[in-house]
Structure formats: C-alpha cells, structure tokens
Length: 392
Image 1 (cartoon, rainbow, N blue to C red):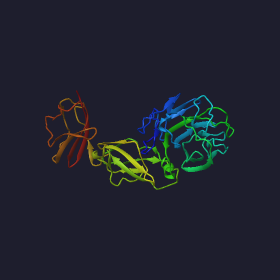
Image 2: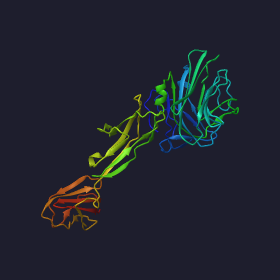
Image 3: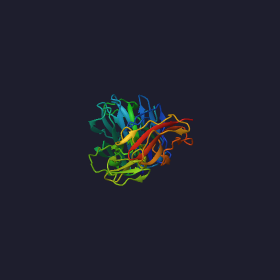
Image 4: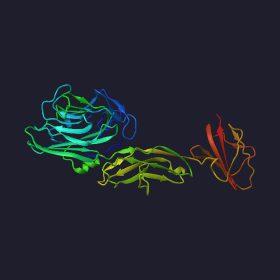
C-alpha cells in the first residue's frame, strides 16, 4: 500500500517484511509468515496468515501508557470464523492469559468482535459480516483514564461499532502484543485456545495517546489503485488515474498530481488527462489525495514515456524506404524535392541526434551514430518518414 503520513508510534506496511516505517525502529518479528497482494493488488505488500502464523510486536514502545489505538486492514480467506486478529495481554504463546486483555477477533458467526476483560461479559460486535474475502478496516481503541475507568471503542470500515465504558479493578496488561492471533477466552462461544487468522493482514498502526473521531476516519484512507506506467505517442492523448477507499461516504476529497515532484497546474482530479503529449511530458507522475481533515496519502509514482508519432498514423506523411538498411556508414534517401526544409535523425524515444538541410547525392554520413534503430524525418512541402538500423 502507500506510506501514510501520520504521527503514529508503530507502522507496518508489510512490503515483504515486518519493518517499522514510523522511524521508531520497533520492528516486528514474524512467525511462519508468507506475503501476498495488498488492497491495491501489489504483490508481497501484505502478510498471508494461515493456521499458525503471527507477528510479535515489541511492547517497549508502549511504556506505561494506558491509552492505545490499534488500526489494521484485513481480508479473510472466506473460512476465518473463530479467527484471531489482535492480542495484547500478559500471556505469551502458547500460554493462556490470566489478566485483563484487549483483543480483536472474528467470531463464530463471521462478525468482528472486541473485548477487554473488565469483570463483565459484554463483547463489542459488528452487525456487518466480515468473513467475505473482502478488505475491511478495523480500529480498536482503549483508554484507562484512571485505575478504575475504562473506555473501549471498536470501529469497522469507517463507522463506529460501539463504545463500552466500565469500571475495572486493575489496569490492563499489555506485556505481549501479537498480530494475527488472539485469545478470546470463553467468549461468544469461542474455544479456550489461541485463534489464528486465516487470510491477509496489512497496514498495521499502533498509537499511544488519545485518538479522535477524525483520527479514526483518517486511518481509513488508502490508495486502492495506483497510476500505471504508460507509453503515449507524441501528439496523442492518454490518462492516468488513482482510486482510494471511501468508507466514510464522504465525497470531499482533493487531488494534486505531481510530475517529477513538481505540482502539475490544474491537475486536481482523480484522473490526470494528458492531451497532445510532447517529449517534454515524459517523467514520473504521482497523486496526493486529501480527505476533509486534510489528511494526505500519496500514490506510487508511474512513469510516462512518450515516443515519436508512428509513421503509419501521421496525416500528410509519406513513408519512404531507406537503403541500405541496415546501414553502416552511408544512408541513401529516395526523395527528390525542391521544397526541402530539413532532415532530422531521431532516436526511438524522440531525441534529436542529427540535422541537415541537404540530401547528399553520395549518401548521408551516419558513421558517427551508435549501432541501433533510428527514425529519419524529412520536412518540406510534404513530410517523409523512414526507419533504419545503424549496423556495427
């Protein structure tokens, strides 16, 4: 996926590793992991979990903080009922937890659930089915305002599932943190065992400190389709585009396209229209997307290559056969015109290499050209094009 600009404490993009891209150096340790496509269809940018795979998250970034938010994208393999997503507690695999434990899992009905043992039995559970082989976004947030007061919040795909406020006797333990498993002990008909996720997990963020509603919405914004590399003939038109998640139902998004890091004037839509391109339009393009909170994500860069107009597609042009072809030192041009303006030899990517205003009877000297393929254009009362190969 794309790199999120956000003040998080831990951020795993899973681009073929469990490295922490937040700059804090809190790299995860994977167990039995393989990698798969992310939400944008890019290979090896998400982790593929099976019946016994997880990521151990260093707990040192938490310290004594008791206000923590977890954000993760997940897609089940379609048979992930009774599957754990996140565990944060005092037990290490394979032991059973004994203390207050925040957790996130998919229950036996295929619904997203969360719970922290606060002496009650209320589980926050979504009404939306998530065991459907589609990408979903979950946020689980808990805050201990003092030793007795606990708030829990669960969000799914940009909407609040529920909030639970309760009184607890002991602050929760977050000694061990795992992604890809949980221990939903004796809850919602779940077995007393470690439950492992089955499917793909991506873009994990863990943040200490108070989170706002805007924070929850911001973490939903991801690029789902990046612009693709393109090759366009000069004089013709084309386009690039981006797509992104819109779980909020909020149509207020702004776009800015960049070419080689410089904003493209007027390019403020999800589609970048490229009309009558020239060689100067070649370069790398990407798009920055902002939501209504001015939260920004950036697409991957795509390369635009422009090529000279195809000789078979240019009106009023005549295709000529140059000889010999391949040629080593001299190239003969079978054109007799009294209205000649110039002869230009170009590389296949449109770069001008040679120019003359005469057609030598003894042939055009091409001995200084490197071996390769070239385009020759004669401008006059009528335009002429030809292709030739310079031999070694």
